[in-house]
Length: 199
Image 1 (spheres, rainbow, N blue to C red):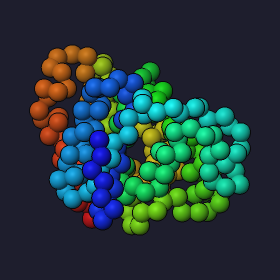
Image 2: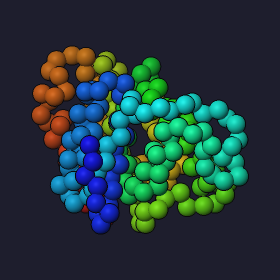
Image 3: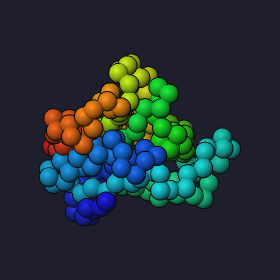
Image 4: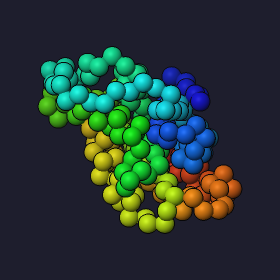
C-alpha cells in the first residue's frame, strides 16, 4: 500500500501484526487515509512479510551507526530516514508490542548509536518528525497500553520522532468487530489527518 510522491511529506505506516487483515492494520490504513487526505504521501510496511532477524548485540553498528545484518531491516531503516512522520501499529501481546514489532525496535540500536553516540542526524527529512502509536488488545485491561508505551517511546526517540499521539482500543475479542466500529475508524482517520496538519 503506497501513495508516495517525492514532492509531498512521507507518512510511513508500520503494521506489526502477525495477521494479514488485523485490527491494528485496519486502524493503520484509516490513519494513512487521513494523512493522504491532508496532502501527505503514504507508505505501509507489513512487518509480517519481511525477514527480520533479532538484534545480535554484536556491536557492528557502533562505529558507523548502520546495522550490519543483511536482511529486510535495511529497507525499513531507509524508509525511517526518509519519513517525515511515522505511524506504528501493533497488537498488544503479553503487555507489550508484538514479536514482529519488537524485533524491528531492537534493531533500531543502530539509530540510537547514530543519534546519541555519533551525534549524527538520523533523518533525511527536515523539520519536526512526529510519531503515532496505534494499538489494540483483546481484553479490557487498558493498563497493557501504558506498559507497552515506554518501548515505543524509546524507539521513536532513537529514530528522532517525537511521540505525538496515540489511539488505543481494548476489547477487540468482543463484538462488534473493529471493521464495524465506525466511530473508532473515524478517530483513526482524524488522527492521521491531524498528524500531517499539526503546526
